Amino acid sequence: MEKNIAVLGTLDTKGEEFQYVKNVIEKEGLGTVVIDAGVMEKPFFTPDIGRAEVAAAGGKTIEKLRSDEDRGQAMEVMSNGAAEIVENLYKNKKINGIISLGGSAGTTIGTTAMKRLPVGVPKVMVSTLASGDTRPYVGIKDITMMYSVVDILGVNSLSSQILANAAFAVVGMVKGSKPELKEHKPLIAATMFGVTTPCVTEARKYLEEHGYEVLVFHATGTGGKAMESLVEEGFIKGVLDITTTELCDELVGGVLSAGPDRLEAAGKKGIPQVVSTGALDMVNFGPIDSVPDKFKDRNLYKHNPTVTLMRTTVEENRKLAEIIAEKLNKAEGKTALFLPLKGVSMIDVEGQPFYGPEEDKTLFETLKEKINKDRVEVIEKDTDINDKEFARMMAKKLINLIENQ
Image (cartoon, rainbow, N blue to C red):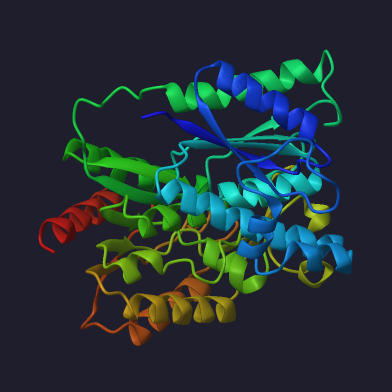
């Protein structure tokens, strides 16, 4: 069966470039499905899926978008419509990958569609924005961003090479055959921060020794979102959620929030999970000058020139405990909560800058009060989170939950 690549974008303003990319892909022996997300001018060439169909999938008519002359509305409608169409094409086995190109509008349209495809499906976005902050465009998906260097306006001696490289990249991804692993091991998702690294490293080692493969996610907001997305998509057999620090940023207003739904995917999916309180002592900000004025008198720790940590308060720890308890009490699968009574991070131990016996006591006591013991097993140990035996205990418990579900 012929493999096809979706070529998505505005064929009025970038038509020449899209035709060039289409020709390169087809010359390499793959098919294309061209989707036109333009609105105002006539397309440079005839697409396989026209703008009227894209607009309709986004909930409007193309005539309405033209008459309104509202660029923001048009981009939203065409982004949503293109995403619907691309998702349906993939589900119906009509496409095997996708490529797009553009400036801010084109990048939004292209990546909105790409984010609707599963992890592993080839996705290439040539963008004038790719050398800046790509987080809003990439999100938690494996989107390959290629900087266009010059504006995407015509095919010239420089842009032709960049566009050809992008086309060759997506062709190679689609044509390529991944070597099969010798054995398929059950996947475990684990969360880690720098201040919980010893714990996660030890737990990972134990799990791998016992036949599991561990995917470690850096708890930086996108890390937590990516983990939960993979759980929802059915890739993960068990979750070792040691580092729940992203909840602090969501509650207090730090820069590494994973959103209000963090710590819910495993529970909803009914997947065994072992949870702990890793790095609940801290909220994350950028350089120290970026910390909001209302927090200037708090306990701040300059982790490095670009990261400033802020110690959570007694009241914040009470609220964090209530949030965690509420989420875990709803879990459909087997759940265990581990409490390290002598510190939740590398810098929350005696002699370190975030050592906070009162804050931690409030966290643990509130958790024990609010957790439904009939649904969640609570294990507390008189040690800090990075103790090797504590780490192994969590790994052992997760294996037990998986094997006895």
